[in-house]
Length: 194
Image (tube, rainbow, N blue to C red; front, side, top):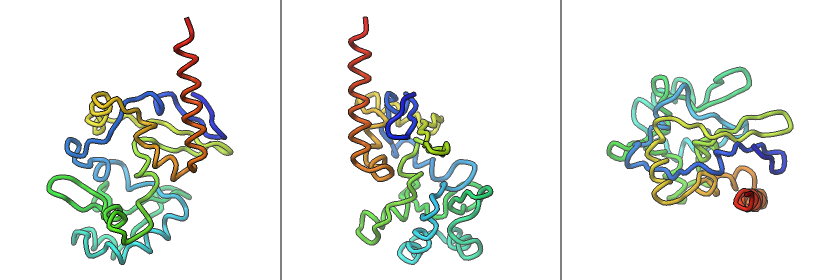
């Protein structure tokens, strides 16, 4: 582990090979899990604002959940997540054949909203844990992401590089530059050590 500006980063966030492979995993992270996507406090309002933009694309069962429960729920005291169809499929899932995709992200790429998707989704499989004055970044290594690990190995892409845009969105581009500099320094020390 190492620290960059009050962010504690596990080594595997930097060194693990990873590059998402939706063709192989079919977007399983959007439909499997213990709850919906974890939300930052301001993202609840973002979800409500984007709903009119994407609601027509949602499946009937997702619209029924949204009508009854809304687009977010309190998942534990003081913590919030997107609501789900059933126990784990995010209400914003739309299908492109067998692949689960995000209706919000599709609207973002079409220029219909400035909100891309919850930051927890954008950063996945990195999970952020609040540790008082620090954030902890950990790599959640789960079976559904094995195709992404294999692709990262083939393409020689590390998780921190693959998620550079998401990390920049969360912490800013200057922080990402400091992270890259720290990674370069750490690697040079490791390769220089006898």
